[in-house]
Amino acid sequence: MGLFRRDSTPLPVTGHLTVDSGSERAPGRLWSDGFGSLAIRCLQLILVVTVAGAVIFGIQLITVVTIPLVLALILASAFAPVMRWMRGHGVPSIVATLVTLLAIVALLGGVGWLIVWAVQNQWDDLATQAQQGFQDVVAWINTLPFAPSPTQLDEWMGALTDFVTSAQFGSGALAGVGAVANFVTGFVLLVTVLFFFLKDGPQMWAFLLRPFRGAEYERARRIGDKTVSTLGSYIRGTAAVAAVDAIGILIGLLILQVPLALPLAALVFILAFIPIVGATVAGILAALVALVANGWVVALLVVGVVVLVNQLEGNFLQPFLMGRSMKLHAFVVLVALTVGAVVGGIVGAVLAVPITAVAWGIVQVWDGPNMPARWARPKHPGDAALQD
Image 1: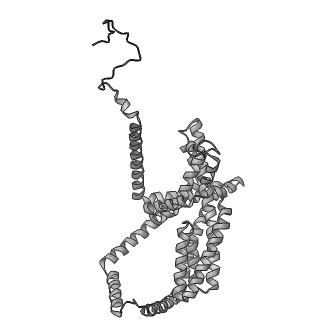
Image 2 (image 1 turned 90 degrees about the horizontal axis):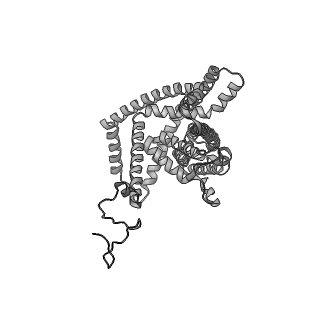
Image 3 (image 1 turned 30 degrees about the vertical axis):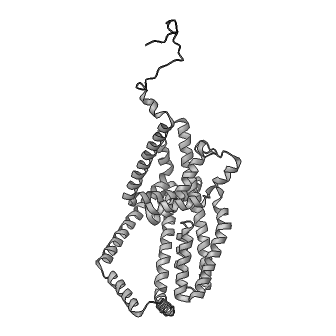
């Protein structure tokens, strides 16, 4: 049916007049409105989460391989300046690699031997002091109005004895043996991979860069350089801070005559690689040893020493050694630690922060040597403070 004037003359049809029956709408237009764009983003997010979950699941299945690889990369990055210096002074590559590798193995083995040796030498005295301290604690509990009765204490001790002699405890011991075997396997793989990273790391990276061309090649080079520099700076700075913390707490423990001072100081050094949480755990362990062996007064003094050392380290030493470029926001650190602990346990918590620092460093050089990715650039001058 056409369009007519009153005199039945057809009206002219122009390009501005269309008739949409609703049944001939293009299927592609269903995704072009706001709701369609939201659906596309949701599908993309689901795909990214699925791929990330599959990657994490695969990493968890082969942690014996992935964790030594990451640790070897971190150690190689930390000692990269030493390797460059020796090669620049004419030292053959194989000699420089062996010297550096032996130094790393000796350092790691020395820390472990120091802990075992000190514990063995002071274990008998600590056991005697622990028994006396336990009896003192029990006597103090009995003075409280809600103290458990001797019958309840006997029941608790019986339950503990039953658990130690049960099959569940035995299966846990067998799992511990398996963990030791995995540790030895992973350590051997770590040393082997670290040898090749130290010796042929630049050649390996050059081989991986072959598929890239032009701007993509320059970006890949920036990512590689930033990864090595970030990991190296983070590990060297953290090791220096951890050493100062361990020495300061060791001096305090020796002055207060707390047993196991050397193992506790070594533990402080190791736990310092877990930001925020590590210092707290080390302080609690040191205070517990002091409480059992020396009493609650010395334990409070130990807590004071730990708090003082941590405050000096956090406010003065860490900003000087780590630099502003390596400083992550406390919220980011806590989230990274939580995710790392869930995915990889203690090792995941140790690796979470340096990996996060590397990811942020890559964002900072994505579009140029000093040009972050477009979405990460501050929109206003005041927003730059949020990058620290």
